[in-house]
Amino acid sequence: MKINDNTVLITGGSSGIGLAIAQALLNLNNRVIICGRNQQKLAQASQAYPQLHTFLCDVTKPDQVSEMFTAIKSQFGNLNLLVNNAGIIKFYDFLHDEDAVISGEEEIATNLVGTLRVTKAALPLLLNSPESAIVNLSSIVALVPSATTAIYSATKAAVHSFSCSLRQQLQPNNIKVFEVMPPFVDTEAIKQINTDKVSPAEVAEALIKGLRTNNYEIRLGPAKALYFVHRLSPTKAEGILKQLVAKALKSQMMPIRNS
Ligand SMILES: NC(=O)c1ccc[n+]([C@@H]2O[C@H](COP(=O)([O-])OP(=O)(O)OC[C@H]3O[C@@H](n4cnc5c(N)ncnc54)[C@H](OP(=O)(O)O)[C@@H]3O)[C@@H](O)[C@H]2O)c1
Figure 1 (cartoon, rainbow, N blue to C red):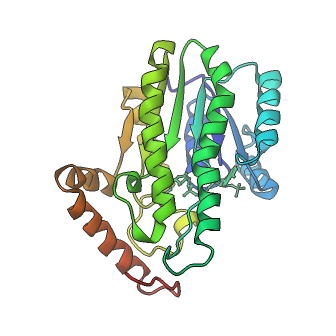
Figure 2 (spheres, rainbow, N blue to C red):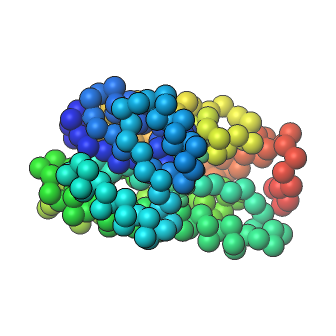
């Protein structure tokens, strides 16, 4: 996939990994559009990178997604790279937390249904470009689930599966489907996890390299090692992640029972 002269939409591009990807793609002379729910965060991103185009859009809201694509079509005329990055993560104990299902529904609506909705809305524009791609942000927990993020892990497993299916389905249409499986990344989303983390810029760098070399499943840092352990022994990989998360949360106030 070419890494210059694309028109890119990054959902959740106002902070964390999404903003780092936006910055990297801007540096490579791409036209970059980001969206998010919080106008203030979008304005801050715009101030830091004035070339960014921003849309206030919640991926869980069908009307807002539809309005954003109408505006993209009329303002830009094309879109050939979609990065489904918007995501939320919630830490809870499924057994004891009364709100576990409500929290889970929010995660499913954003991480999974949001990804499906934006992808479906983007397809007509992607099909219209000679070279197009979709990038889905999953996580290594798609393969190695964690007890403290039960529904989040399930949403990422679904995003992984969807990415594999979509890759097959869109291959005849010349739309490439990439998936990024990061390890722990130093962003607001997991600030309560006290462990070694890669930087958002490292994730962006791995994505650019993956796009350039057509590496459809992009893993980096500890996610690479955990992936290989998982291939040999899924139970062992789960054990490693469980220990890591338990250690990382030990000093925190969060009530993690049954760990
Ligand atoms: N951090 C990690 O360790 C890690 C590891 C593996 C995978 N990931 C994945 O990487 C992606 C980015 O995560 P991050 O760590 O960069 O998190 P982050 O810093 O919290 O950023 C999340 C972004 O998504 C936006 N967002 C959230 N819900 C949205 C919605 N309904 N509609 C539109 N935008 C929405 C947020 O902006 P608003 O709040 O303004 O909407 C924000 O810009 C997520 O899919 C996450 O699951 C993260």
